Amino acid sequence: MNVLYDAANLGLSFGSGLTRTGIFRATESFVREVLARPDIESWFAAPLSYASEVQLARYDRSVDGLLGSRWLAGWEAPGTTLTESMGLVDRLMDVGEETSRGKRFMADLMLLDRMAQAQPLVRNFDVYHSFRNPLAGRTRVAAEARVVTIHDMIPLLFPELCEERFVKQHRSVIGSIDPDRDWIICNSECTKDDVCELVPVERGRVFVTPFAASRDIFHPEPEADRIAAVRRRYGVESMDYVLSLCTLEPRKNLPHLVRSFFSLVEQEGLEGVSLVLVGPTGWKSQALFSTLETRADLRDRVVLTGYVPDEDLSALYSGARLFAYPSLYEGFGLPVLEAMQCGLPVITSNASSLPEVVGSAALTVDPTDQDALSGAILEVLSDPELKVDLSHRGLDRAREFSWARTVEETIQAYRKMIGE
Image (cartoon, rainbow, N blue to C red; front, top):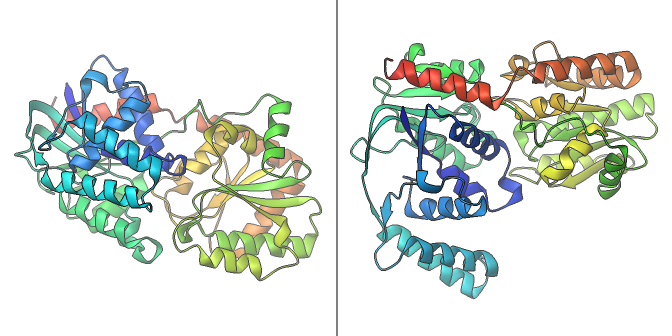
């Protein structure tokens, strides 16, 4: 079976560690796994735009030609080559977009992008699969089956919690789907339910293949010295801490977590225990910072680390007492799986896909109930046996997820789509 993958989001996200998370990490893990499958002839392209093709080429260069000969060019830009265009973006990244040279380089890139001509990807593919972007037209890509991955329906369900550009992008993806001829893959049954509620597509045309956590990055850290060094690096060497990891944005419900933690400290003392929030600042994060400032007397009990590179994550997870993730809504919820895979007890929401991911291996609470969240945190902090039990159950649950399983179930879905 030969499959063309629209992997443009690899190129559009790889440039910064801040964006090499979530969907990027899932896409890259899937690509590496599917490339190891001898029964799948994988091809990769970026039909979205010439600029996305340039970025995907830069990504491939950064990973030593992972895609290699499986790369297909889908654009032709007059007066330049792909290598020259990559050099233009390299120079733009070096000088920054705000400098006078950077603005000129950006204008050159935008001009090339507008002038580039789309070229048909002329191979006859069994399956054309877009990981995140709108499906290209049938005259552009010839394939027996066309499928797009829908990671969540949050931009349509909760547009007020998203940036407008993500709402527009999501609508364009949904608009590219022919509900009578195309197929959809979701990462959870919850997302499938949302899709079938909001898109006029039959349930039989929607498949579920769950994500996994990278075992190279997320695992119990065995070296105490390594954990101690990472804790010192982020200023938590002398305290116990409750950990949460995500982009600081409204959907993650962090003001609620902070209020619950402040309430718990006020009622129980919790000397020597802090709340550590890991992740870059995202959109509409003012409510979080306003919440922090409401209790100046407790502000120093909350540590904001900002972005943490992959190489420090397992140690930071392993050094924590528990992981708290009261997200309002998730399409899948990779952070809870990552935490369980590190052996960390998890408290998360009883909403959206999160119960589906954690099963019986975590404590789940109403994400709007402050007392319930505070009580769950106190329960884990004060009960060593519960902490050990949740740790073991989390590790067992995490073993049920793997990228090999994801790819295998995706391939089985392909076979059903093309009637094998």
